[in-house]
Length: 248
Image (tube, rainbow, N blue to C red):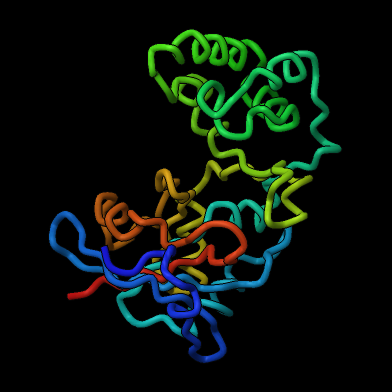
């Protein structure tokens, strides 16, 4: 697979035109096509910042013709103000009742937090969340996983934040929700910056593609190949922008 985020970051670190980035190495896709990936370090993006200005500041100074951009879904949520604070989400009866019994194998990562579970209830309703929790609990002994999110939907799966262990204090009291108009956002961002964009919610488990601009040059399969080892990394690296360079 080439270099991965687990490699020493100092060995990956590069600087060009005032931009700091990490060379994540070259990967080869299932169809034999190769991709270089560069994880671009940004400042901590706050609520309401302009996503196009981020690309102009951090991406365009090192981009080459033919490059494409993976834009992190969480940063996009911050830019578009698709966020909730704990003050806006007050746990009710079902959230308080279910959250102590939730676990990563029953109701999904983080659903033991009553605020996050309440946000899920606010989004899809208590009946669906309760039903999903019951089904997950019943099927857990049989090794069946993932039913909770299949029942409640991808929108709930995209909730991030309210993590007391977060590397960033901001995310301990703030939750982010993935944008539903991903293609529209990507088209607008490409028009303003000139670089094709795909919106990704990636982690070490999977790479969830939320949408891409209309003329994005890579297929969905090729995007998955290029992002397979999660070049975005985790924790406090601050690398939500991944410049993908297809090699001829």
